[in-house]
Length: 157
Image (cartoon, rainbow, N blue to C red; front, top):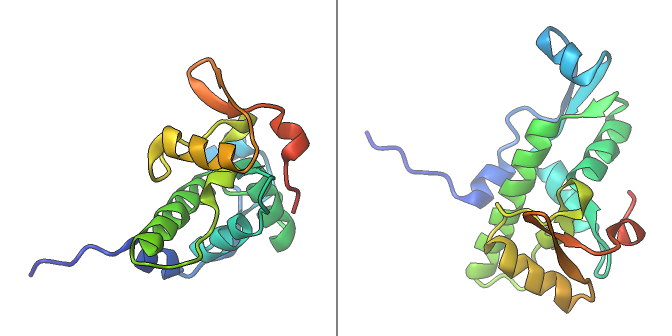
């Protein structure tokens, strides 16, 4: 039997029993410290990404902090938050290609340091165009494209 590959939208809506908060244990203590980690659902990450207004940006780390606060955890999981942001971005682009008039502004969620996420749909150039259309100045910094003065444009949850 050949299994059908899930669409991005199906992946976005597959919560896999998340969100949950777990104690940081084992090897992760040396990496993340002691305490608890909030493991979000894909829809939670999608929801936070959708809140960033035009003209503002956020980072995956800001979203992680908001998730930790929401769940009373020490940190938000860097792995699942990043993966679910990628899923949300692709689901938004998938919906747009199917004719949806509204989708989340995934291009406003940056990597740390204000860098554009090259793994989002359309790559760096597509996101650069979208960000510049909203009034952001994008500059090359090392190998990355970053929002100039992004700290003053951060959206805090």
